[in-house]
Image 1 (cartoon, one colour):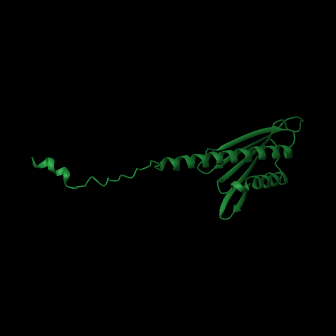
Image 2: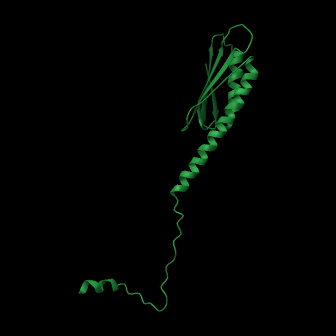
Image 3: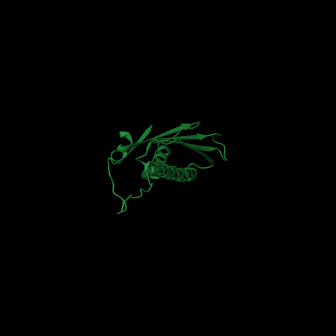
Length: 149
């Protein structure tokens, strides 16, 4: 099931997938809400977020829950983050924090790269102003004297 978040005309699609267990509506909504609040400041650059939840050992206890985020960022490489833990909500908090940090780093690198590219196009070479001294007369036809020989 897809969750659609709309921010001022841009749409971020959040898709939550369950593997190896029955993903109930409450957990799906919790995941979608957490992703929406986590990524709201990046929403204009994110088209789609896939959240894959897996219960590796079924009803057994232990570190058996896994969350994988696949974040499709506009004009940037896809971000993939995976984390394992015992309980869904702490695991969700942890992976959301990591994803937010990763997105912030990627946006900073993109801005830095954009600034370097735009600066490379600027020509900062100083042009010295050429002035003729008062004792030299400039004659625009002086170069033609060589042609009359």
